[in-house]
Amino acid sequence: MLRTKRKAPSLVDLCVNLAVENVKYLGDVGETDLHLLDRILPHCTLDQLMHIEKSTVGRDLSSVTDKLWKTFYEKQFGERSTNLVIERMRQKKVSFRWLQLYEAKLKEIAEAENKLAARIRQLYKKEDDRSGPGYNLSNGKSNLMKKAKMDFLKSREVQNIAAMKKNALPGSSRSSSMMKPPSSFPGKSSASSNMKSLERRF
Image (cartoon, rainbow, N blue to C red; front, side):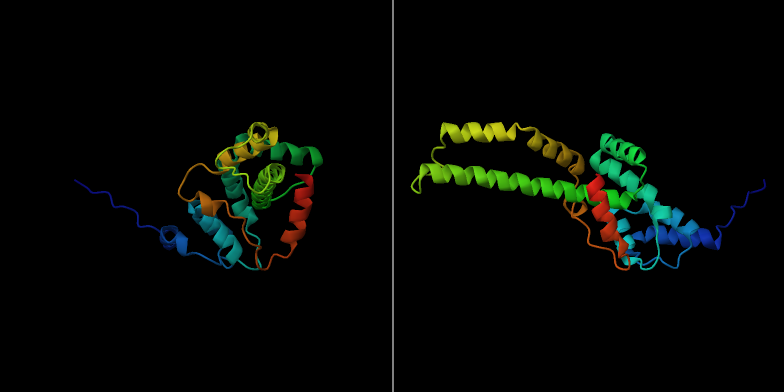
């Protein structure tokens, strides 16, 4: 009985497989052909892809990574948010990279959380001022304070932030690192100006 010989993998396939197995060690991929990156980078986690984007200097990877960032955006913030961004870009006849949109969304959530924390501190400060220095909030909050806090927690602003965080933090062990706003990319000075334009539009 004749045995069918298995076709030996090509040298390119071996290199791609090796890169995929060690994708967590990849950094600057500026010299790598795009058709190879198209096979390798889809195996990256969000953090790994961000590291590669930040490490690669003097080359735009968006032709390969843009669709990957769109996938991460949808996983993090939901299909509804993704479709809303697409519709806004269509209406305004503009186009942004999904990495930029992802960064802008992280900044939006961080700013909303900061505003929320400031308003909560303001509520407690007002109650402290009204009740006097000897008043102990832990032992007995006034009915006014309780009502103000409940009204605040039921407000649309708080509910919107909670909804964004629910989509952005799916409960994985990596969620904290995934939600950190990424630093600026070396060699990509246009990113900051594009981000300002993006924030004004979205």
